[in-house]
Image 1 (spheres, one colour):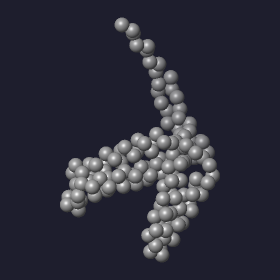
Image 2 (tube, helix red, strand yellow; image 1 turned 90 degrees about the vertical axis):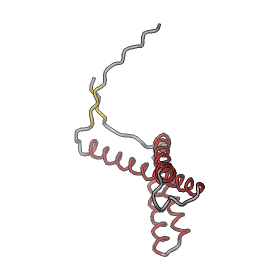
Image 3 (cartoon, helix red, strand yellow; image 1 turned 135 degrees about the vertical axis):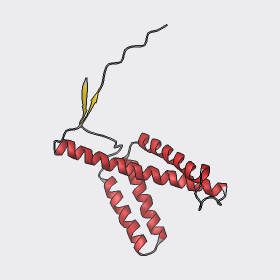
Image 4 (cartoon, helix red, strand yellow; image 1 turned 180 degrees about the vertical axis):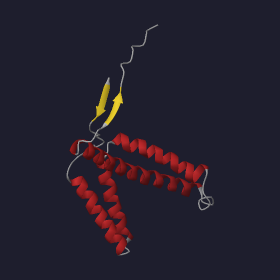
Length: 143
């Protein structure tokens, strides 16, 4: 049996205020950066991150957060680079958690943008979508 993936749906909430929150947070972060006001820049970044996390399904965030945690542990604790080699264990763990959070938000945003582009090209432009060949699984025999 051949199935065609017509639409990719990684979205959790699709409220119109989510892209608005991303835009407002990005503008706040940019203003904070240009005016050298770290509090405003961080607040804008937090608004963007929360909007992205509200847009993506929780399972995506959980999987990507786990991958970020593994990458952060590998980068800062198991095989630290030269700049992180002299850090204390608590500083390495904080860096790992920050890396995991940033990785999760950035990869969530990437997946959401890729889904928008895929849906645009397959639905709107009518380009050929990804095809999957599936076969029926046999029932396991009870012993």
